[in-house]
Image 1 (cartoon, rainbow, N blue to C red):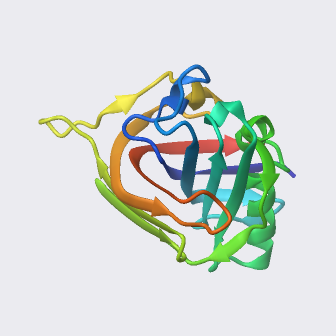
Image 2 (image 1 turned 45 degrees about the vertical axis):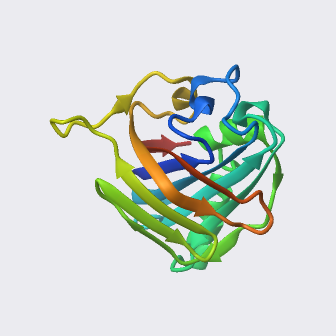
Length: 200
């Protein structure tokens, strides 16, 4: 059976604003390597008859050069509140085993998948977004906007097409960090927020 899900995502990485990997393979990341994470909260979704609405997950990885140079090592974190059936479907989707945009991206940039971890994930969305992913990840994010309160947005960046994102709002994420013992630890201040509508 096909799967379909919609919701919110927040991407952040080890770069300063704005992560050059969004612009394609020709621009190197700030530190010559890339550590990044994508937080996702599913508003509505289902796969193989399993309801995924309300589930939270994180797709995270490390790349020794740029994101698009590949050879990445990645892990999926799934909220501990999910059921075994939800975990099975989410892991298959986010590791690219069930098709869709993440399958295309993962096949291009991920060489090694680490075992999936199940841990408490909390996300509070808003102009100031915060999140915790077990003991390994912490997010502090402030939406960038002009004096009129309008968000700073981006359209048409190369990586946005790969992730099937039409529009992204830039966010300042200083104070955020990732400390998975099996991946390169990182801190950064680059972030984007988007809505997604994915299916396969």
